[in-house]
Image (cartoon, rainbow, N blue to C red; front, top):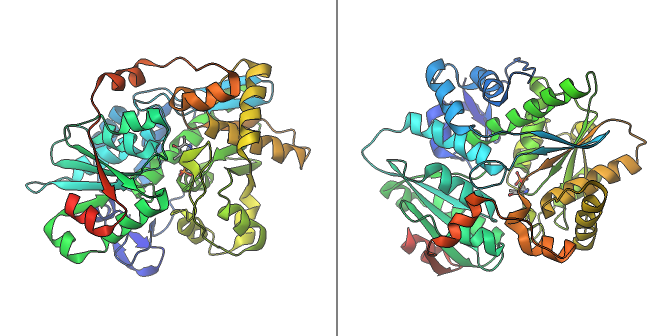
Amino acid sequence: MKWISTRDDKKSTGLRDVLLNGLAPDGGLYMPETFPEARVNGVGGLQETAFQMLKPYFGADIPDENLNSIVRDALDFPVPLHRLSDSLFVLELFHGPTLAFKDVGARVMAGLMGHFFEGPSTVTILAATSGDTGSAVASAFLGKPGFRVVLLYPSGKVSPVQEQQLSTFGSNVTTLDVNGTFDDCQRLVKQAFNDRELRNEMRMTSANSINVGRWLPQAVYYLHGFGQLKEMMPGQNPVISVPSGNLGNVAAGLLALRHGLSVEKLVSACNANKVFLEFLSDGEYRPKPSVRTLSNAMDVGNPSNFERIRAMYGNNANSIRADLAAYSHTDDETLRAIRQVYEEHGYIMDPHTAVGYLSLMRYRDGSDSKAPGIVLSTAHPAKFGEVIEKALGFSPGMPPQLASCFERPKQTVQIECDYGALKAAL
Ligand SMILES: *Cc1c(COP(=O)(O)O)cnc(C)c1O
């Protein structure tokens, strides 16, 4: 498999460079030169599904045996389809070590990069995080020889639990608390990647969701969830609602459609940050500064995977609309949804998942859909205890993975929102 950039389909690149570069040198996102025809039925368990899904992409570069152990090591936790009612399901993506869906992509990516690593110089993984990416990436690379992780997060704009989790890894992980927004963090990271002087000095790669090593594995849980649904309700095509920010998750869902996922619709669920929704409604893409919401991991004003989605559909907004709808919801609605789901089903949704639930309901209101609905649950509610407390009046219990980070000291470096400061820190 060769890889091309969304901005140049003439020049192709091999897998190793695609993984380690993250972003193509022309600033575009990597895409497979052609999408393999492979279809995966998703009924054989998560690791088996992952191997089948990824082999046509990576099989020529990574021996089967190695690919198999990469997915087995990375995806060693369950992704259950939890049934709330006859027609409502939650696909729980948060049973990995950092309790958010980003563990899936980050852990497979770390395994893939590890496969291609050749010493002696260290590879720096540089990433901006709106909360969950950072922990997932840090956890995936923690203590991995040959790698160090540098994370940037917007000061005061991630949840207290997220911050504690992010800043207590130590070892080969450095965390920078940036006096700015998530978009500022993303901009600084981009600037570092475009800095030739710096890149001559150190090998750097991005771990954001633009990396092919994260994008592809995320398609796996769609197929796995669909496989579980087929066993419970054979022959049904679900509506799948995806809490969306940087659009990596949705881009993976669109990829899964090419490999055997069959849906009535995918739904991109947005909070007040809704540039993607606006694009779907009038075909114009107008990036904006992000606004803060209770579902903070979705506070993105210029989603990086937008370019990839557009490229997958030949720049045609109408064909994107055929597969994907989008809705936007306020914080008040989010709090009400958490309450409603708890009252009706005794189930606690984190605020991102609650936005997903709201979009599913909005889609049903507008369509008389009878299809089973699946909400992707992107994080464990304990990561957002203060929001749950606000909605329900009590905090959800804290799983051991999370409780343990409160026993470790914070090790974060505060920097100004300025490229010079990042460069010095690097
Ligand atoms: C990152 C994140 C999202 C948004 O996912 P994208 O792939 O960036 O669209 C949603 N929910 C949670 C909990 C997240 O951490």
